[in-house]
Length: 194
Image (cartoon, rainbow, N blue to C red; front, side, top):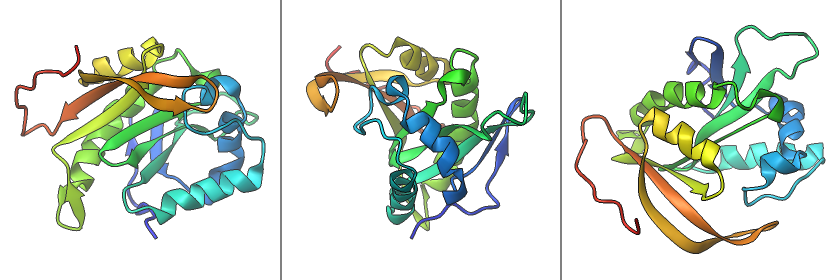
C-alpha cells in the first residue's frame, strides 16, 4: 500500500497541500458528483460516498499513484469544504488535478501546481521510487483553462494525440500532452504532432 508520508506537507501563499486521506471522502464527493468537474475525466459522475472511499483506497493501492488534498489556509467559513481540490501523480509520470467548482478561476490550480512540482521531482528521483526525467499532464483540447495553468507553471506542449481517449460522456477525444522536465535536465525537445 502506498500512502503519502503524513509529514509531507507544503504551504503556499493561500494553500496547504497534504496527503490524501480516507477522511477526505465527503469533500471529494462534492467534486465527483459535479458534471463539469468530471466532464473531461475517465470517471462518471457519482454521488456514492462508498465508491469515493473505494477510489481513495485505490489510490493507496497503486505504486505509481501519489496524491495530495488541497485545503485553503484560511477558509472563508466553517460551511466551506475543508478539501477544495486534489493534485498528484495519477499514473506517474502523469500528474493531474481537480477542484471544486466554487474555487475555479481564482488561481488556485496554478498555485497548487507550482507547489506540487518540486515535491514530484524530489519524490520520483530514484532511490526508493522510480526516477522520472519529466512530469506529464494530459488535457482535452477544449480545456483551455487547464492548458493555461500548465503553461504558467512551465509545462510545454509535447504532442497532440488524435482520438486516443474515450471519454464516457464525450466519446473519443484528442489529447494534448504537456511535459515539464526535471530542472537539472532541461533538454531541448521538439514537440510531436504540432
